[in-house]
Length: 341
Image (cartoon, rainbow, N blue to C red):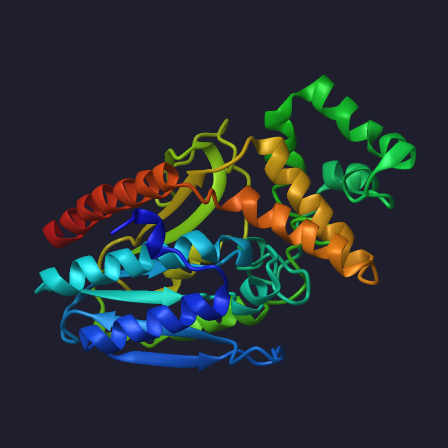
């Protein structure tokens, strides 16, 4: 079996295959309809599968599709893990697969939800004052240019290139792209209230709160790091202040902190490298331009979506093999650590 065969071409194929795998393995499956967004192609929903004993006091949550563009990889990795662990049947740990927590984003092939809110900047206390991001505000028009190409874009983009020249690419990722709450049609917008993906995740986790003593979360992502490599981010540890994600707030995995556990939850982000950082950012910028300019020719719009998909998923056998083996080996270790608690 080719490693690339675990991965699906779109949201609806991924959902169908995950549903079928749960049925074949006899796993209980919950269907959570996504309110506020519909598609003529089929139901838009999040699937939650349980693998292992319901009376287990330890749980491993494995989540895909926080960013809709990354469900292509995340769903395939979940499908692989589901088959692997369904055959091994862990005895004292229950695995909870949360498939497509941001299904609208996956249907639309965009990073955000249907309202342009980035779910991984949206899990926060909105009763408290929202943080400002002056670096982003100053560069918003340079990042989200009016033109997608040509001399006009070059003029508008100049301050962004100057910022990188003066401060370095790490400053861009840490200070500018960490999230913002002031430009609703901008990039990395965290919103002004909790949106559907965050609410859905809270509901899922609260369903296990009373029966869980120890828990770990794995959140599957792509687009950061060297191609095919795994960058493992342990959110429960003190983050490197120089790390690219050190200043990001509002991460979905932090919903784990609301569980009344006996030990501190462990929260991991798997980031698999795809294209160089600038290529990934450019794909998101063009997709953002498309949201602000929706009435373009269909072929142009499709080209932008295809570029975005290729930036977050490498459709090559060696890349698929690499991310599956990294996922298998790292998840085995995380399960062993959880079992030892």
